[in-house]
Image 1 (cartoon, one colour):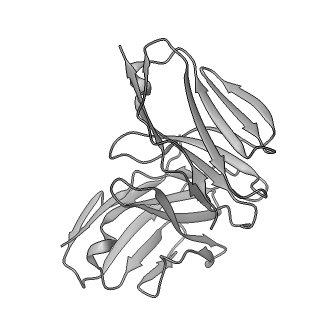
Image 2 (cartoon, rainbow over the protein chains, first blue to last red):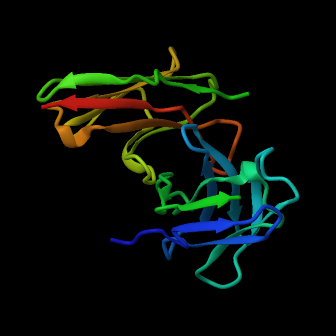
Length: 115
Length: 113
């Protein structure tokens, strides 16, 4: 069964460093998302991406964040200068779109720890 | 601010019982409703989705939607210890056409053998 994959599974970084989190969405899906979950808190929407551009972003997704689809399979989230409060689990999700089911399928997540 | 509210629990039920999980949402324009299960340290895993008022059954799971009351619930019949997890209610709010999901804080279910 097709699934969303994410790398790395864990990332430890120093405050102020740049990190890139990688995702491979399900191959025929058209909508891609990043969510984050701070330990013990809700899953929060960060950004949605469709047709090679951001379609919606949350207040959390400020200028320190960017997303890219560098090729036909990868979808990346970059945090330019990490802060302590960026420590969280980051989930990538994808959705078929084009009138298909609206269900979003989540990857296993990347646990980011900023020291 | 569009909100999705769940009782955080824990909800404790004996093995074999019915577990009832509830969720309310604030945006009347919401169209699609999802239940995800999340084990500790893992990602959300889809259990069910429901778009129309009424009940939808899938195996031991039944989702119920009442748009007039802005209420969605999940019933788990014949609860098993392996059902012990956090159940997340997620809503695709009406004002967004990008499919973004708003999540509740989750209800922790404990099924005791």
